[in-house]
Amino acid sequence: MPPETPSTPPPDGPRTGHALVAEALAADAAFAAAEARRTRAYAALGQFGVDANAERTSVRAADMALREIASEVAAAQRLSDRTVQAHIGRAMLMVDDFPATLQAWGEGALTRAHVRAIADIGAALPEERRTEFDALAVGLAPRLSPGRLRSRLAAVAEKLQPTTLTERHQRGRETRCVRVVPGVDGISDLIATLPTVLAVGIYDRLTQQSRVVIDARSGGALATPGVTGPDAVTAATGASAATTDERTTAQLRADILADLLLAAAPVSDPTVSGDGPGRSGRSARACKWSSPLCRWCGRGKRASIPPSSSGTDRSTSTRLAASPRRRRCRGIA
Image (cartoon, rainbow, N blue to C red):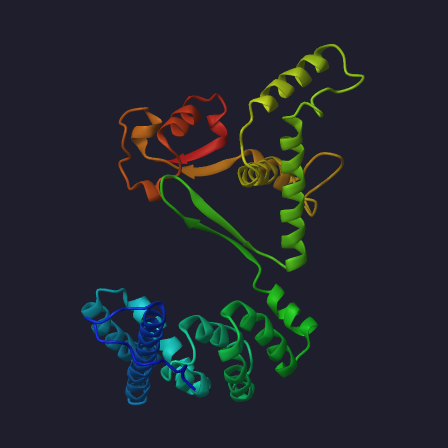
């Protein structure tokens, strides 16, 4: 049931805190109803494309029918075709598999955050179990915040799963991968999809190693007992650098991760023979990167291509180009 909202006073009357709260709740209910109506409209567009696809003779022609619809909506809203197709797909999921949630949303009993939590968790269930999950979720959602709702729904979904967690984990392992998401200003995101135990272990080790560096700044870990001669000079140089290190824990995690991945050899390398590293370990010293030709030459303050597409900043490109070890890098200008 939608939350009760007392009538608001006329605009020219006194505006008390109670009246403002009522006005905000009424606006939220109207907004939720509009979002639910929009969801049904997008689902109708998708169903129209499905019906049109039944008359097409090939898969490519059937796909083009839905893309034509999405393209028309995208042009009117100044969005990309893929964005509109994603909206249509999610709307059809809500209408087909979570009708009770959509009904409660339209009545103002749920917010978009509640609906997203229900759809995200329920989508992992088999289609034949989603109706039961939908009914249970609608009963829980109005009494909980979206964050608490997610944790409760996760437990509910686990009971409705026809397979065990071990079986689903084995399937999930097949999705592990590493990908790069280009950013701006020569910064990108390196994303690794791994089993949770490995991901947590990697993050914990990076945190511990970063704390060692931070602790060294206080001077307690700068002195190395029993080290004399040239080694003592090297240790002192490293200690001096540690005292001027102002990197945060997050920055140290990123730097240590880069050092380990670029300089270390993997444990599982089938090409290892003897004590030395295999081909996989030796390839850690080579790199492949791209940079505008003007940066190789050290000319120009701006890139000849957009910053989001360039591999490095001007100073880094110039330094690598001047390095005697640049033969180990394959620069693509």
